[in-house]
Length: 252
Image (spheres, rainbow, N blue to C red):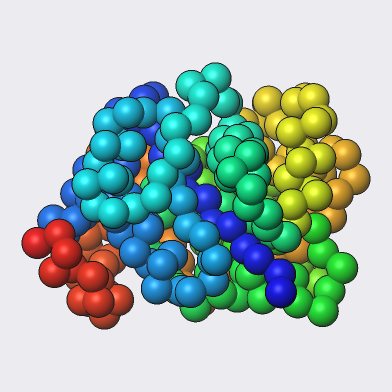
């Protein structure tokens, strides 16, 4: 039976929002939202938090969440996920695929995590990425990574700029990405690429090395928490979220 590892990378030293993984949204730490919703999906045979910060290790241990201490040197969440995989492999575990589930996208729906995992089924895919359609101000926001796709939702390019030119709608890339273990290992063996560094987007390394990335549609918009003001936006968007009621008593 194929096994799936879920990795939630989190670090306290965000340049735009220091300490954000443990900031509270509706009285629950953001990282707890991400972990609990991933756990509810049942998509992962093992779910783990990967962090360079002892503070997050101690917090996750106090909540009974598995975690691993990773290097401070990683520039990309994908590289942190690979180190987490390596740590578990050294403990004798093995996985066929890895789901990278970000620690700053607290609205993720469990069904979308399952859809990301299931997109590998019956298809010869190596990398899959959750996306959803955006319009208006999001097109101009450099914090919003835009994804250009073909008619089959194969992703052709990512950018923080407004692309395609003059478009009134496009897709947003979410940080929810699935890899085969082979593809993730290949990623970290490749040197960083020019467009990856110019755009500061992990997945450009795959595209520039001729890997195919399949887009998977999210069932609803998801806000990435990049700045302190995004906490207020997330709280407004999550006020009527019914999934929170399945775990809120653990934290409130």
